[in-house]
Length: 111
Length: 121
Image (cartoon, rainbow over all chains, first blue to last red; front, side, top):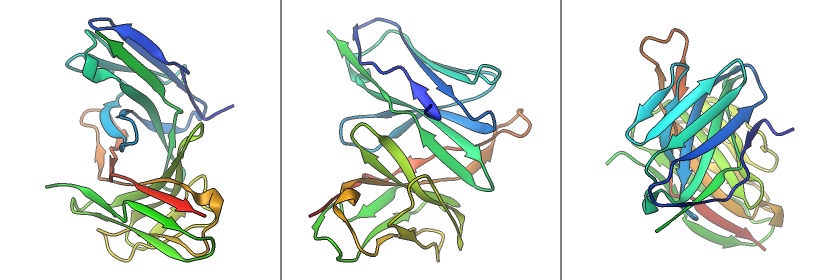
């Protein structure tokens, strides 16, 4: 079983749609959580950290459920520019911080 | 401008010829890390460094070396490159910060360099 698993995708949605990404992690000692987006052949860019209390940034909402070891990202009112791969990222403290990436979920937003 | 830089951006080399990929950040970040990205395997951590002179292995350290003699630089060394090290490499750096109001939550929001595409023939 992979340490961080995401929906395989791809997701094809029309502009204006709401889309949800799911992610589960296997190491209960994991301590910090993130969503990154990556455009084709470019570097990953931080979208948002995910906190226990949940957090929102404009059209983006992230949730964390430590008991279920589950992370989610909701994008409301999708834009063409949201088309990218969304990466779930987990840090686990083992004397230092190890970082594990999910395989990513590709999103296509169409006009 | 706050940034992480990598050099070279593209490199084609031959098996066994030692190479170094440089990574530098100007944000005074303590934490730095190297990743490789391969189709179907995603991003995997090679090595990371919590601070100067403190480095540790990630998930795929075999065939790589790193050093952290100064805070801003974290070079990745391939002593004897092989074709299975053909990949897209990313360097990243971060501060650690404690989330206000949430006891014990420390995040490492990593910022990535533009990537180095390495081909070993």
